[in-house]
Image (cartoon, rainbow, N blue to C red):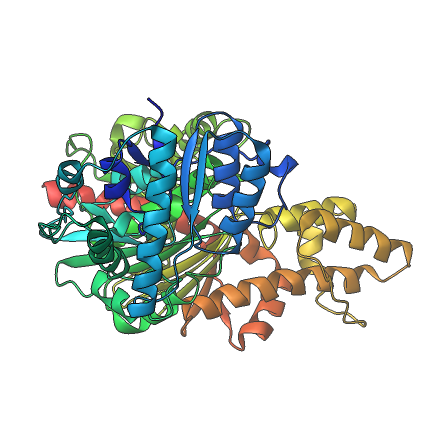
Length: 554
């Protein structure tokens, strides 16, 4: 028997069950939208494309939709024309829970019952209807919640796996609350549907409803210890609620956005891991630590360079190495560690604990623990200067701005990790286009005559602009300043989003770029602390965590 899929919590699942249906939420994330993009506008949201992809691949034969938004209406029209479905029905529910909406919804329910009954060849079964009502299960005790727009099953599973507390999916379709009351002993179908319409409409509202003040009950919970707020690319319904929640709750809050593909869930892993590390104090889990010579190592495996720091038990840095990562994170890490040991005059067995961080941290098997670069950069920056409250790290693959407290713990952070714009890779590619090395580029642009603006932050388009500027015989200093300004503008925007506070410190290899540092200081309206060990900050933080592991095990 085919499963009847639905996408909205206002779908009358109990009615469909009473008519012989086997219902399931359509909420899986495809690898891409190869089929959907052949027949749909490219700017419809990822979930709309997911619906199209599932039907076109033949995974879905029966589908009941609710008029959630214009995208769903458009998708319904496309699916109707496709002829791929055995049963397709759109419920037209008004965006309120008043008496008029209840009457309209009851009529819609009866229309669906007639169509579904004719399709299935079944009649309404009152007993099955009652049996379908089940009280929603809620997590008791300390927990986290996912709020906002629907989150794909695969991404939610990742969230559950990464978080230190149980996680409740209270996003969109998953916060369905029908079942708190059992249906009345009513044999008249019309009156029963009138009662049922009220139950469907009186759930905690979604953001499509005209009055969504009742959503506060989703996060006014004394056992709630953190919120992951999810939005879907090209969907505006849930973008506004995040700001309101931020003002009315004190629990840790992380906002993420996906395009509803499996690829986007992978991109979000570092953000989720870093958020998890802010929920509870670090737990010393991992390999058994044996006290040895009193030396501790941190490896920061980045996309461009691999950095290693070795500390003694007094937190003195006795070795600091920066080497190109090369083709493999594990090989690059081993090579950098060997160089650091050589510099310190030590052997591998002299290291009591080793913590890995950075882009390639999970590929390094030699570590005792893996911690995100967000937390490690915060730790390292605090060690270098305890007065620092905002850390700016422009890495090879991503850029991040981290706000920290007086103890060096992460209070908030934002990342740009969806494209090369505003990252070290962007500068590297632009230097190659201008036939310069990065060292030369860091000095160029300090003095300029024409204030050029690079209008596109897309790396590919920006490269075309640079080629065009070169063809116009623009001065090299002016072009480089334009590139620095583009990166600085994007980074300053991240700092504003995170609520950056004095003092600011810049970490990572890009901190050596004098032209960019100067331009970023102008955009921020403040000076940046550039420590001599700025590039080693992530590895330093990892080494400090390694030392603390042995302190707690002692």
